[in-house]
Image 1 (tube, rainbow, N blue to C red):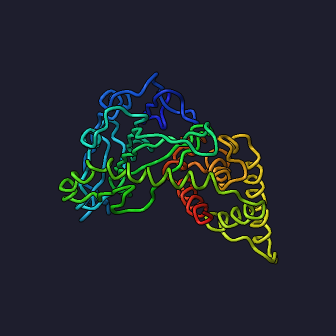
Image 2 (image 1 turned 180 degrees about the vertical axis):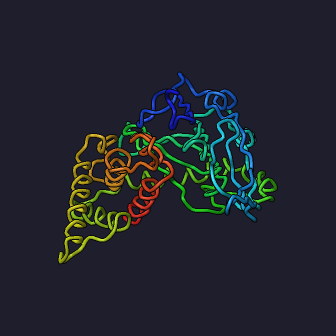
Image 3 (image 1 turned 90 degrees about the horizontal axis):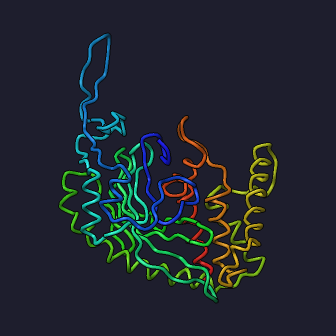
Length: 334
């Protein structure tokens, strides 16, 4: 099918295509139930037993089952017996209980292993003059592959350059996000998730204050270079001071290439929207621009396209983690 993240996925987007070029676009933000249908999330997940074969004899695997997508029969992930499936319809009901009426995007990734919904919660201007708008959203996500929890958190998208930034990576309760693990008791905690938008709103206020502070912090060229090197070491690995081996020479070449790209991005017109040229905000977005658009992204399956791999990495993978690290290091400058 067209517009899918994989052949068995759909993503619906409000207003305009995402930077990765994937998804079905609607003229305006659809209501929650409409988005759920457009995203094709009406399928359920079943728990099926696992079997081993030895000499033609089959026996059940104790303590483990397989989560399987009912409509396609695709195996999503092996989970323990204590795992509690949280169906897509329950995620939709959770969003409704949290006050969501319309969504900016909704869909599934990785063949249904990840399901998400994004609702807009606000916006603010960054910089010394108008023009650089950051929109704020509440992200609700669920995983059916056994590798993650039910999630509600805040996220920001820099509209001008379409950099997507995951703001929250930590687990547990916080003012910016909450996670609930897939245990039998998880539904007893849903009331906490339904109040998550209130907590997220508080987190968004803090995020806005942080971003504005970054946009007002001027950096010298030396400070920018130091920041880039620190981000590189923290996200990509060490930069050898003395090159004695071929492997170290390769590390240095890679570092020079990435650092050069970040420096070039500082001169991009998108880093002067709102008068933020030469600031910590511009430095941060020079890194996130590279993470979203320029970095090499490996496919995780044979049928996955480069756009699909990049979209996943930016939202949920290594790129997402690196951008969170880059933001934390930028905030140390102010």
